[in-house]
Amino acid sequence: MRTIASNRLLLRPWRDTDADFLLDLESRGEVVRFLGAHPTIMNNREDALASIARRRAVDDPVHGIWAVTTATDGRLVGNLLLKPIRLSAGERAGEPADVEIGWHLHPDAWGRGYATEAAAAVLDDAFSRGLARVVAVTDPDNRASQAVCRRLGMTHVGRTTRYYDTPNELFEKLAG
Image 1 (cartoon, one colour):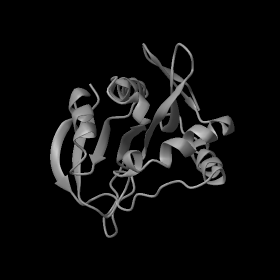
Image 2: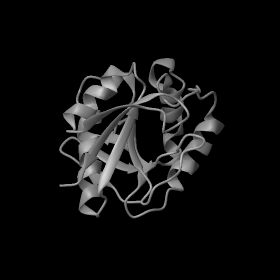
Image 3: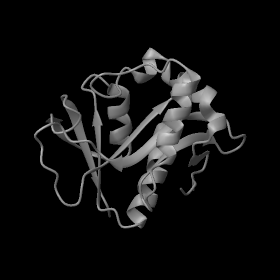
């Protein structure tokens, strides 16, 4: 998987040595509370290593799940993904499959514009590789991620139950 750089950040593949950071990140209720219909807190280092292995298994020229680090010192600050989104039960997939962008950052990194900067870099990269459309879904109460979507120039499409078997606010961005 490739590395993507922005002015202040480096998005790189996850490494086993990142397990302690990932465990700290995803053991925090305030971080995972909006992740999926049934947010789950990570409980141990073995779960973190297994999650890292799944993140590295995304083998695609456009999609990926990246560790977000600061460019100056390599400090881990969060996670960013670009991958096909899971449809709710009963939904039919279109062609091509919808691709989702998502992020979650460590609370120590909140409020610095890192989510917007990292997502913008990944969107630029994906669109330059031919991706035509990206969606983001947010919990209806996740105002912070909705603000990031708007800063990215994503259009709010409305509320949907098409993904993850739960109501979400849907945003989209088209290439160009």
